[in-house]
Length: 631
Image 1 (tube, rainbow, N blue to C red):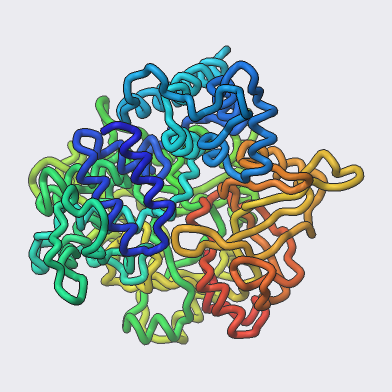
Image 2 (image 1 turned 180 degrees about the vertical axis):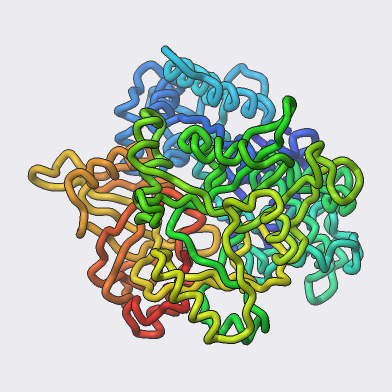
């Protein structure tokens, strides 16, 4: 697929406000991508690699500006590009219309060159990711210059955004998921195998975007039937098809691979996908709830302590040709090297292939849990690991088993020599396997059927220094990435929100060289909406740390104000949430204060605008909203 064809569809997506039409355009693009389907699918989401792969391009805005300046001609400097960026607000717009009158601008890109292909762009971006060592930054700029020099304005806009991972086209994971089903599985019968096993949460991101408008452009390429019925549902895939795509995404975290499987192998290929050692899956999440909620919903309730630590997924296959142990964070980043004692603990005790879900907790000399921030000191550590190991002791509490071999040679219960994928097994069965493979670290799980029993367990957990309790349906499957009602969490008080930084302002006086105020946003569908600014509760050291974290993500600057790519998540306290026309969310935090950086969370994990609206409607301070806690 030519990159120009991809960029043309990206421009259509950016201009299209309707969700249904957006899904149709994406489906059209996927069908037209041909051999480049996997790459095109990832590019739509601003990615070069699957979500489970922690390789990054590691190209900052400054390198991108330098490459644009070089491609724009000898009379254009990186400072010129930066000045235009301050006017235009985002790098894609600058790349598309950069022009200084008689000087050669980006509109001249591509003169005398063969058309740029998606495959060429992908190959070059992967070279950027692999570049390391002395001179690597210069080589990256050279490679980007080579790409920009072959782009027309639309291609340049798309390339600049792709390089910085900021597509800005209103297409999120939910849209791509639905488009895959509609592009390749629209003819699948509603009663296809797997529809019950992988039912898609009605509230999952983008689920309402799945209906394709029969009047969408490009319908011939997408094989969309123009003979749509009056309800406009003729182009929808079946519920089973959407569910099969969702299930495959849950265990692969690779939209490109799933799109190819849907096209080439259909429902059968998607349903054959299984969790694999070395390929982390998203963590299953919980909603907030009470003991009464749990008893009413589940009948019997599986109760365990809620640990004040950092989520971790353990992947291990023992033996000379095995794998790991490797440890992955909630964001699927590899944190193995930072936690050598956990690696040793697992390797010494586990003798079958496993994938475990658990929590890393910092403890004192008596084994009592320490605050969450102590754990983060270990997760952030890339150097002096041995010294930090002595300073902060960590333990693992495993509470779920997602995959397990039946014996030391890896044979599972299926008799095919492969470990058992346990995701669809009930919680009780998964916990039994956990106790079998790692009893020393298995969290205590007690099944009760009345509120008083739950509250007794909660009181004991709090006395032991834990955050609260988890309340789970003992019959529930493990659904990666889902924040459903099968798991509930209960803590005594809720005093914070998790929000992502989308802007900042330079400080004043002695803090003039640091960011002093931070614009925060919450999740709204596939995007983010501002909810307030925080400048209270920050020490000089914390401001310096945040400035260092955020500077690589600055995408535009105007005067003292900066626009920042949503990457860094903060935990903030507040007195109350009020309706306000000041911010795009329609709400504002009253007296917000900085609590800490949530290094275990990505931008996709921040609180949703829906929750903020409920809080504001309740008219209560945070302590009255324990039922809505989102951690």
